[in-house]
Image (cartoon, rainbow, N blue to C red; front, side):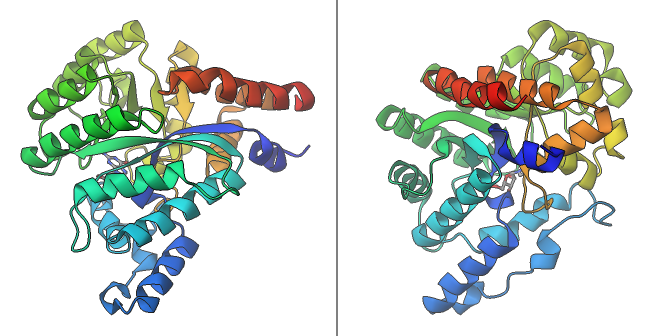
Length: 346
Ligand code: 5GP
């Protein structure tokens, strides 16, 4: 089987995908049509070209956080959110993804509250149409550039929905512009969620901030996202690297996102190679497949080409990712799906 086809067919696990950053051009067009059909013309101005950030885009890392407004403008009602969800899940499924932990930040909009936002996602996932066979779980995000009161409210809602729907809501995420806000301030909200049983993933070390990286690693989240500035060669310190190596916290790596947002200069220089060589648990993810015009199979292909990984090693990466799934009851099932494919094709 040629590599593109192999990687698309390989059952894969997506553990770091933000819903509003994952909207494809066709999903955005579908959403535009929905708003037009509903007579809500204020949402007609979707600046698709501005939403996508290709390699070499002149915008800065911080500018990336402005583009999400374009998607947010298209997910303001429960119906629009459901369209965005189903369309995005279908795209992941068509790309060979068999399990996804999708994350999203609840927002109050003109047409729905944060509670309705979560309720829509949870109920839509539970009643997904039959053609969606991808196993889907939800991670609720807290945004570090929002007021603390929002974080507290989201933590409360996450706990409430986790208690009512433990089959859907599995974790809490800390994300948003890393150059704004301080992790310390959000520890009480995140700790409450963790004490209630939610697993925690933190966007960690996206920019130079070794003291915050240390605080995050000491918090002992179940996973971290990106982990760019942790190794001393990547604006981390000996201490942050040693700490990560000791703690063996799994890292969600998003190569194209890091390159296109200029956290990393090119694929060859990506920290993947240090993590892979050091045996740090890692999982290949997309982050924002709409913004960065990528797919999970494409991210695997980049790893294959850049780091010369054989198909069997790529399949191994997909299989290992199962151990870092928050929904522990799903690990064996997802492993079986991947193992069956591997036995027949590797
Ligand atoms: P949403 O949570 O609205 O579904 O997805 C978009 C949001 O995810 C953004 O507004 C931002 O808060 C967060 N996000 C998306 N990509 C990144 C990333 O690469 N780093 C960080 N820190 N946050 C991100």
